[in-house]
Image 1 (tube, rainbow, N blue to C red):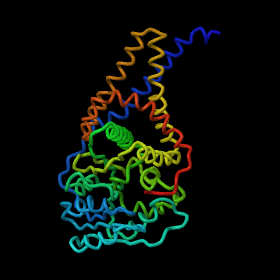
Image 2: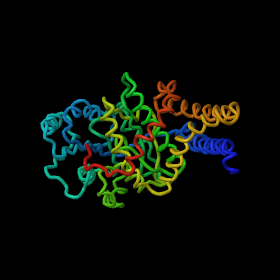
Image 3: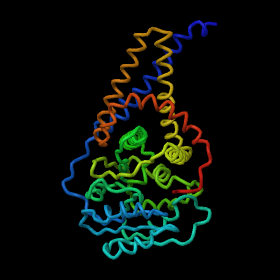
Image 4: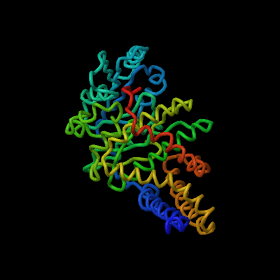
Length: 374
């Protein structure tokens, strides 16, 4: 009876607790990216690099994007390995033509499917094992570097003891609400994995822009521990091998890659469902931290509205505004760093959208992923 009589106070106390947890994430964790300043480089890293791209029926993307990788301003030895994974389109003929002009393009033609290895892990593994150089730089066929200095900027992330460099894979800015939502979700994800890495608990990277040492791949027996999972060649692998000591980030706009965003809500939903289906395989500590953040972010607005209506409206509103100011400040700082600052005027709408977002994609955590990587 006492609980029923004091339910308003209990709801407000829960609202304050959720707000405090959220403030802990923004002020204690995400602020690391907001105030991040990379150490100045006395000289650029100049090490041989193997860029690896996997493609299946990506002829159109190869025409648009591959030249931007082949003409990078990088004076040290480098190669671009393009793994043609059983394509049925004109990919092979395009590669043959490009090979005539660009001698550092190394085609790798796969004509057989790998049994019992889902996703693109097999073609990516073949590309890595074929590579001549110790430093690997991974991207996708639908990505193009944001500048001719992409390769150099990503290599500048390496220092003594660094084995993994996480980059930012952005999406092109186009008109429309869907584009803004896709870009905000991409930014929001990067806000987390960059901040976690800076806090010494790295948990993922994105295959659109990722670099690591070949020795890390071989030492951990490649993707053998996650071969049964269709996805995860980027986030699950990094979740397994990344540590506080061996992981760095590079966030300069010149080091970004750009991809074409999905054009329809259905295609985007399918893409995100596939991505989230790998999260259940993360380490427990990462799942707990990510889950607590998502849960409190989802609960914040229902508890805020209930507290404003049924408790003391001005006290509840004051708590709400404090969190909103801290969040807005962190968002503005980090959006500027990742060249997504045009999204800032929309951030409150995106925050409300995230409540629906969690409902839409929660089932993906429990769904069996499809055995495809395209």
